Amino acid sequence: MSNYISSFTADIIGFVGMFCIVAAYAYSNLTKEMNLLLFNVINLIGAILLMVSLTVNFNLPSMVLEIIWMTIAVFGIAKALVARRKTADIETL
Image (cartoon, rainbow, N blue to C red):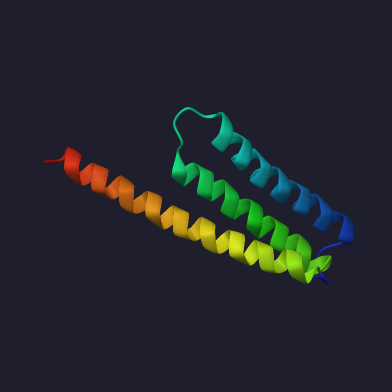
């Protein structure tokens, strides 16, 4: 992928990813009622964008961190979807 994206473009993509992760963190600290699906989807998008950036401006520790961040976000998305399904099932009873 690094042959298709300039270093500048990769930096912009990385900054957008970083903004997503920071915005999700700020949301988690400012909201009165947490939407776990929204929180984890934004974190996943941020981690993916940062990984795209890291394919051009590679840094191994950061790449490993983003892989871990994505794994946690995917787990959180799955957990939020299961919880929503259980809530929907209870409401239909």
